[in-house]
Length: 294
Image (cartoon, rainbow, N blue to C red; front, side, top):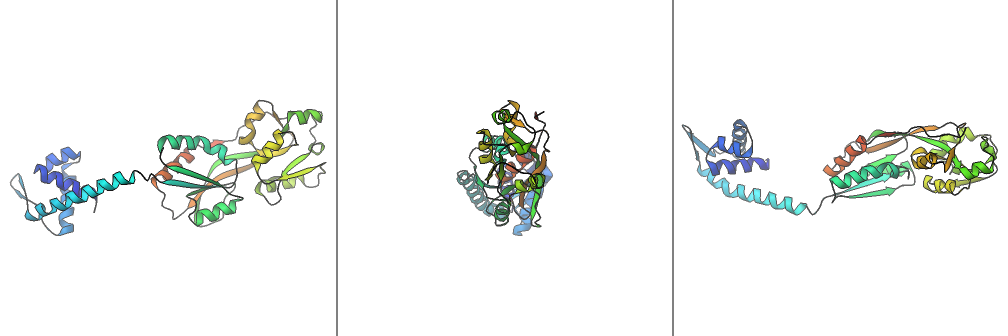
């Protein structure tokens, strides 16, 4: 039974008039009448009698006043008590680059739902995120590719690119050579998603050194420190490309991939989680062009 029906009943009982009750509650008179009739059908008792234009409460109606007051009071107490529990959201993320995309969303969400806590867990691979969403450890997950899992809903929220870049000092050291085999290469660990994107392009090429990294954030730092060139998501290094700190190898193809938001098909999201989900979908960005090495 809708709590509003009891609130409407109490207003009608207090005023003795359904039209006046409708005005106070900002309802139409038929809506108030319908709610009272729903209560009468539910309890199997007449709550009011009409004699001409006058409304009289019945004995059953008078009995229900006490219970209705207690029901509404308990409901209001529950609302006040649960304000102290604004909820939380658990996010599973399979790549550190997602943090660059989540920042504006998290800032907007915090301004809208300041008391709701958000936990962002970095996972070693997309499979860990998928497993966490399926087992309800994560409300939402972020992965670098579309998922083949019938129990999940998924939305592509970002089209991103891997770009080949090195520190300007490194490029200067090798006299602006466009031949990547002249440079030390920094790569992702074999078997990773990003490694798989460019592995065929590097196949058969001879490099003077190779250092493997498991995380794009660590590889980014190595590139910025001048250890060599590497492939990094554009969103992570665009400011450094724009200010000339890093130089993109324009003769190497950008590699397209997507960031996908996933959730369980049967998951009933809390109101804060729905709010966060909508903010993510409303803040879509698409990779743009940055200066390349001539």
